[in-house]
Image (cartoon, rainbow, N blue to C red):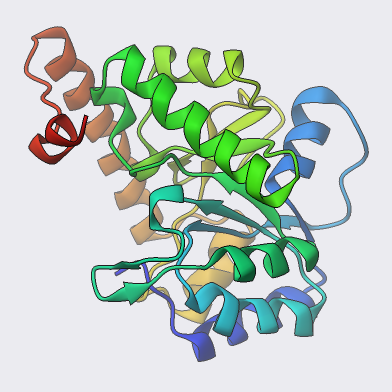
Amino acid sequence: PLAVAPDVFANQLSYLRNAGFNTLTAGELAAILADGIGVLPERPVVLTFDDGYADFYSAALPLLKQNGFTGTIFMTTSGIDKEVAESRMLTWRELAEVQQSGIEIGAHTVKHPQLDQLPEKLVRHELYDSKSLLEDRLQMKVPGLAYPFGYSNAMVRQVARELGYDYGYAVGNAITTSSKDKFTFPRLTVRRSTSIDEFRKMVNGQDTLTVRRDRMLTKGFSVVRRTQIKLGLARQPEWYVQAE
């Protein structure tokens, strides 16, 4: 449901270009909104991609280049150079080329767990190891992260700050504004089912039925997850416990 076909993606980028949108990286937006460094261009938009599937390199990157656009890809480091769920992930060579193309590389943890369900020790492991590995292999600073599934809590965000991240992206299904905490920046979810008309409305700040539904679900899940933690009902996935 979250995979967008290349021809649909091409149409979305064409709309953004023809409508006069200007792309920034997630880090550039965070620096402008939260730190007052720089000035927003006219009609700013940030394009983000999670996980690090190889088709970002083969299909999305050429289209971004063709339109003169940049963006940010958030990498799950345990998948690099591997196949996951019958899909190939980016290799280190491809990731280096992505970086050299002007795309920002952010962290998306090591194993893609639900961070708000983990104890602080494992949260630190996930956030530190993913950041440090990307920085060591690519010889660059990793400025920010996206929380897997969009889930975080106060402890997760504090650990991210302590480990040197500059910003953190959730989901939220809302437009980012200058009043947002730079460790809870929201994003709009573009789905396989998102029509070009709905896409146009979303990027112009108009609510759609899907956006409103997703926003309500996000808020509802947040309440449920906080309650589970308070009641001691949150559990780490068995595979994660065994791996640790």
